[in-house]
Figure (tube, rainbow, N blue to C red):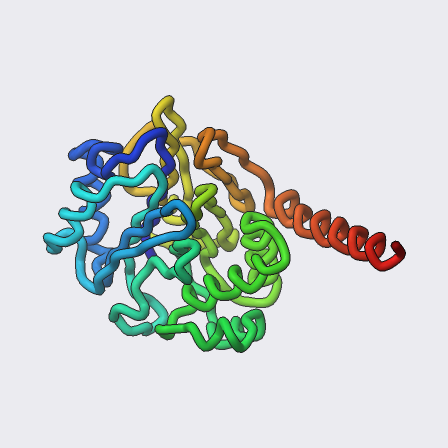
Length: 268
C-alpha cells in the first residue's frame, strides 16, 4: 500500500514550489511508514519519464533533489509500503512506465498472477517486477489499445473489482495530454486500515494548478467518491469527474463508432 500525489500546473514547477516546504515535509514524512521505495513520474511532450529508488524518501538525498530540482507542468510522486510479502527492489518500485505514460497505484490485489489473464503476451514480457501493481498497469495499457486512456482505466478497474479480492485500486496516471486519477476501494477497506480515511483520494483546484493526493497531509481538499475518476486536461487545467460507469461507456461509444466507420468503408 502506498501514498500518491499528482499535479498539473500552468507552468513548469518543482514539487517543492507547488506545495511549499511545509507540505513537502508532511508528504515526505509519510515515508516513515511508506518507506519501501519512492518515485517520480513526469509527462514530456510525447511520453513520460520516471526516476525511482527502493529506499525511504525521508532518508534520501535523491528524493529531495528531485522534489526541489525537477520542473514539470504535469507529474506524480509515489511512496511505497510493500505488502503481500512482495520484495523491496527497483522492479517493484512505482511508478511504472512504457515510455508513453507513468502509472502509480495504492492498494493490494490478491492472487496477482490472475491479472495476467488481462495482459497480452507482448505486454506481459515487459514486466520487470512481481507486483500486482505492475500487472494492473499492464492491463490498463492493454485496454488502452482499444480506447482512450480514462475509459481504459475505468474498464480495467471494473473488471478487476468484479473478479478479484482487493482493498484498493486507487491510481494516478501522468500522460502527455492529461492527469488521470481513480478512486476505488472495497467498502470495508477504509475501516480495516488504522487510518479510517486511508483510501481517500482528494484534490485541490487553484488558479495555477490542480493537485490530487492520498490522505495524510495538507488541507483544503475535495474528496473523490469511491468509484469516481478524475481527469485534468494538461492544456486548460479543466477538471472532469465522472463515475467509472460513465467513463467506461466512452469505450463502448468509441468501439461502436469504429465499427460503424469500418462497415461504411466496406460497403462503399
